[in-house]
Structure formats: structure tokens, C-alpha cells
Amino acid sequence: MRQITRPNSFIFTLYGDLVHRHVTDGSLWIGSLVRLMAPFGLSEAAVRQAVSRMSRQGWLAAHRSANRAYYAVTERGRRRIEGLSPRIYGPVVEWDGRWRMLTYSVAEAQRERRDRLRKELTVLGWAPLSSSTWLSPRDAMEEVRDIAESSGVAENIDLFVSDYAGPSSDRDLLSKCWDLEAIASAYREFIQTYEPRLVKERERGSLSEEDAFVERLWLVHDYRKFTYVDPGLPSTLLPAHWPGTTAAALFREYYGEIDRKSLKFFFDASGQAASA
Image (tube, rainbow, N blue to C red):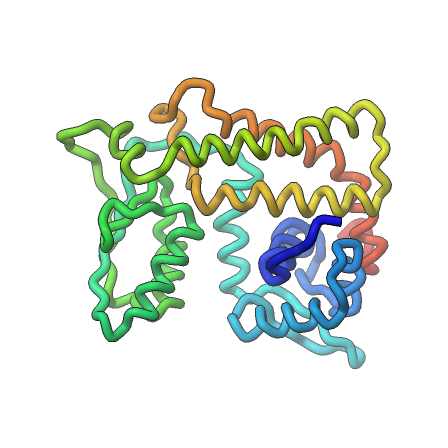
């Protein structure tokens, strides 16, 4: 069995892919969450510890009903999910030819806040042009304002929408800020991992509902990692035969292939109605 190394992140994948999108009030009873994580080898203690940590970090909030504790994503969590979802599920938005730029000036005494801002920018797929100047080709200004606020540096940043005027080209700028070969290599690894599984399931349909659920969450979790390194790099600036295009098509096809069976297991195990 493949091991989950970061339960917090994996549970966030579950909320983003299934709970937020298929449960009317966006919440799960902690007992249901324990059942849903059991096929991945997470113990009840590990689930409760992860949920407690996510609550302290401001990603989940609890409410009680009939002596049961239910957890839903916070407003901060909802904004993060809705910001990442288009980069995972589509649709692809063509680049408008302009760069989004963030600059910051944070004193050394606030280094912790500065480091948190950098980490959050990386999560959104931004890349450093210099130590205090970060770029994205994607219109993600609201998300950046949110992370600057949550990092405690909202007063220390400036945001710009700009054109690149040289002396190099937009393509050169892209290559300078993002390691395209490393990103391409990661996409190829994803394709090598999941393409045979898609072919097998398409030809045999042998996954059980539980296995399809497990496969779905790993598929989304693995593909979600690309949002950290690829914010939607403009196709017009990328090398020919970019593997990210193939990986996106593979993800959506396999996701659709196992959607029905995986949802059935989710509804049954979580006690949710299939119409939710």
C-alpha cells in the first residue's frame, strides 16, 4: 500500500475534490472522515491529529450536531480550493500576454512572515524573478492578497500588471523563472505512472468502488502537485510537444473513467446522499 506522508495535505485533497464539490454543506462527520481515510492506511488517531492541526492552521472549522463533530473548510480553505480548482480541472484559460508581479519589502525582524509569504507564493505557482520580486502569467491577484493578509505582510507588498519590454523575450523570461526541464520531467513521470492504469481500467473495468476511490484521490493528489510548479504556463511560450498538455488530457480522461465508481464509495462510506 502506498503510504501517505503528509496527512494534512491528503485530507485537503479529499475536501477539495469531493467534500467541497459534492456535499451540500461542505462538512464531514469526523467518523466518516476516519472511514474514508482507512483504505489509505491512516489510523483514527492520525486522522484526528491531522484534523486538529488543520483546524489550528485555519483550514478547517468544526461544528457540532447531535453530539457529533463535523468539519468543513474555512473561508480561507474555500478560497484556496476555488483558486486551485481551475488549474486542476480546467478549463484552460489562454494567456492574455501580461505578467502579474509582486514585490515586497519585509524587515529581517519579520523573517518568519516573509518566509511564509514565499512559501504561499510557491504554492500558487509563482516564481521569483529576484529575491523580492515574484511573477505569474496567471491573473491571481485576489489569491495573492489573501496570502499576504494571512502572512501578516499585506502592508509590505506591491502588485503590478505589466508587459515585458526586454531586452530578452517573454519566452526567455519564462525559462529564467521556471525550470521547464524539471517540470517537463515531472509531467512525463506522471504520464508513465497513470497511462497504463487508465488503459487497464478502460479495457477491463476491474477496479472495485473502493479501489476507484483510492485511485481517484491519489490521481488528484499527484496532479495537484503541479499547481506548485506550473501556474498555467502560457502554451505560446512553451517548447513544442509540451508533456503538460498530455498529462492534463490523461488526468481528465482517467478521472472521468473512475468518477462513477469512486463517487459511489464516497457516498456510501461518508453517509452522504448520492444527490448531494
